[in-house]
Amino acid sequence: MACDAHTLHQIYAHTAGYCHRCRRKLAFTAYARQAVRGAWDIDACLRPACDACLARPARPAPKDRPERSGRKPPAPPPHRPTPPPKRPRRAQVCQHTVLGGLLGAFVAGPWGALIGGLLGAVADGAE
Image (cartoon, rainbow, N blue to C red; front, side, top):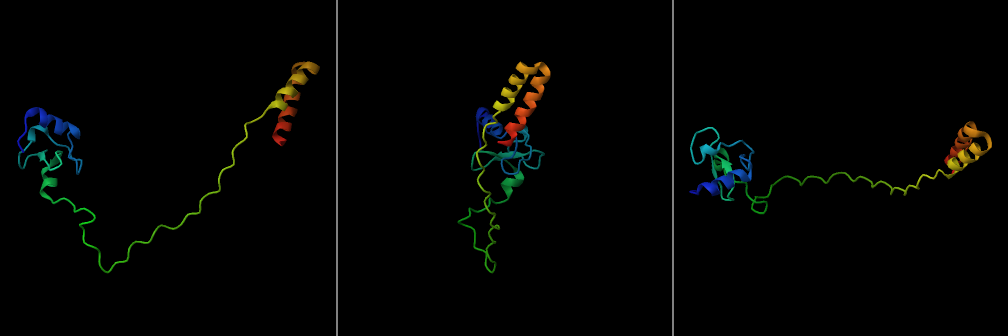
């Protein structure tokens, strides 16, 4: 296929210089050359393809493929039971921890705040 240089660069850059079928690296300077490393040409889809991919026929569409005779269709994958729906998590409430810490700090200072906060956390965990 004969193209101007700008169109040729666009087609080559469309796949970043790789064959769009087999992903083999192509050489831009090897366009329309035979038996050269990285040789390529433009296929019917207007994409770059290496000489090896252009030489082999394209795979037929699924509707055009002949049916397999004598074989059973593959079995469907085993059924996996759906997991139970997750319960919505309650927001972590730490009101007893805060209240216990404040009350302990008011009554007994820093050590009271620590002990009151710990007791409040135990009460929060029990709910």
